[in-house]
Image 1: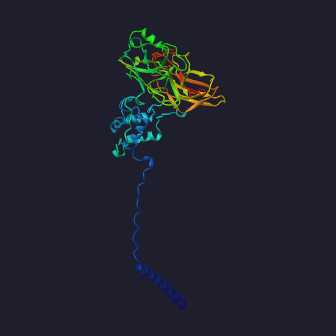
Image 2 (image 1 turned 30 degrees about the horizontal axis):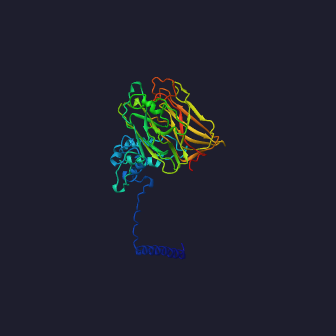
Image 3 (image 1 turned 90 degrees about the horizontal axis):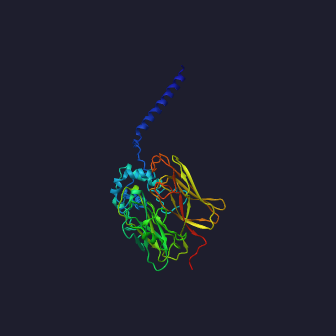
Length: 448
């Protein structure tokens, strides 16, 4: 290697060493950089829909809105749900019955029509009850409680304008099966009245199966009553006297049927001096035999009545349900409405073999209107379903009813073992196929 090459290599190596030394000095003189803290971990916030459910906050409000009309002291339900203790004791049953939609009882399809007093729970309410029980059914803060719901004492609609009561107790004799008895309830009104609502108070809720109220202006029921010993008279199949189409009935009562006033301007006629005849069906299957004193509360119309409430039955009385048939269809119809009407309410009715019932109206232009759809009939919980808006059915409308019955051994409610052919009849072991439509006539105007 030549001298110049040695010199250049030494110079270059010195530069590299000097640069390395300078870098070390700079790093040594730099301020210390503190270590970065570990990131803060924030717990995820619970979903709004999963907020804790307590009795005092959510549950009691659901019970007030959906359940306490029946589940209260003096109500028709077997236990109360007005306090935390009531709900806690029955918490498992509450979840079971609501999740299966057995409670609150509502046996019509709400998608068919919009009805008043629909107590059906929303899915969110059902889920809230389930979360409450799964969390141990906490009471929560009592300061969250709403004001207790106040119910009328005795009569659901408040004190009636007039109360008609059986003149003496009736103890039915079930040796021959169910008992149908009519009782004459005189009125003393000096003028014609219109009734807006009727509330029946059964003396023996366990024994009284249903009540139908008729109006007698000719004294026929009094004659029948005088001809038989004991309270009232036997009236299987009807009241035993002629009734007119315009004043045949003031309605009635079956378990689950809650009273409701008619709209303003609509009433049921009660002529002066008329007798109200109360037909009571006493059920042998109740397992009790005790004195009964039932009453009827009348609520009179407070404003001028322009239209009468009439009852149009869609009915079939000539059918046979064969023994063993598990899905036998029975139909009925009103082929042609001779006048325009508005339907205010509907009352489907079958007995123990009933499965489903659907009533539809076909308008003159071909459009179909669902009036009621009962997908799961329950003989022990029947009702009158009032439309939020009366259904207009013009002249020429056709109304059809289709009902299905289970007369097989698989039906736990079948009164016959083994099954036998069943036909129309008033007895519980017989069957019925009927839907009462409460209507007003478009052409009627009683106001002066």
